[in-house]
Image (cartoon, rainbow, N blue to C red; front, side, top):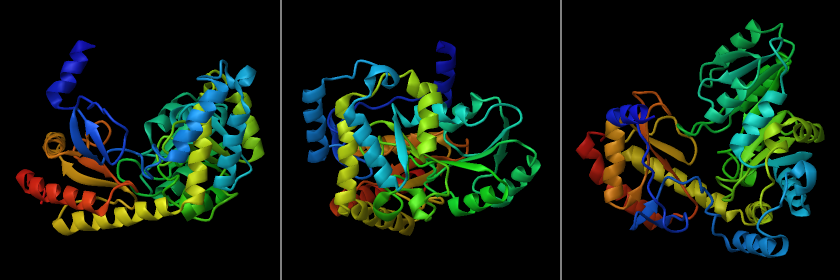
Length: 386
């Protein structure tokens, strides 16, 4: 283990996470220093919303700190069911099931949707690691198509035309580049080739769609996408994973998904906060509007300075650096100026595609953004990025 770690260090590919010493807000304390946070998934700034925090406290006082069991036996509380009902209402589907995390939703659900070599899973080449791990747990054949390339997807579908079950899996918003899957085109091809579709909407919930309902709403595909996987730990500001779809999807996942059946249920305070976070988003649309105002302003200003923001279409705005050492130095220099913007390096991205990944929040003020932009403009030329 030591040899492997030292090898990572020698290549500048090791992780050394900073320590957060306050709430994860747009202005927070990191390693003892006041910092503007640009590396959180807290897109809507709901982690400290009074209604969300109060709901968690009140439920903890009523139900206790934990549930005491797995949900399949004695750990399902009424507050869990209320949170799932609210998810289904928010997503515009019949039913939802909440997992311990988005990761456990993918690794638990995907293996239940295929049975063996007679089936095939077809996956975008840039899908999240949790999807990759879920696929590895199956015995199905595997096809991969070039990122967001519908011609390549159609070709793979044709190659596996004789498969008994065909399952297409894609991220909704891709977490490294901030681009969006062409879900309408994917859905159309799925219909033509009798395939199922699973979309991981973890970075789309609270971000895309009418009021933040997600990528399925964004494309008007309600009822046409079989499985929506999501997460509470990003825009919704809490913790937990989501599977949303028909009543049949919920019943299937509840009875066959090991990561749900064999995990202790979430603390009741978390379930109450999950429900409250969705209610806030549905009742207070200004959070969603501010997020997109900040996103459009910040991206446009970075581009006007000459920074390369890649193909971003969402609040995930990368600043492409190329070499990993440059990205890590850029992150260090930003931190010294009071900005937290993490370096993303191989193997999370290609070796020549290292970047600083910035993520917008509804809680950032225009003054915050202008201060960050001033620092980017100061640091960028030192690394020949602009």
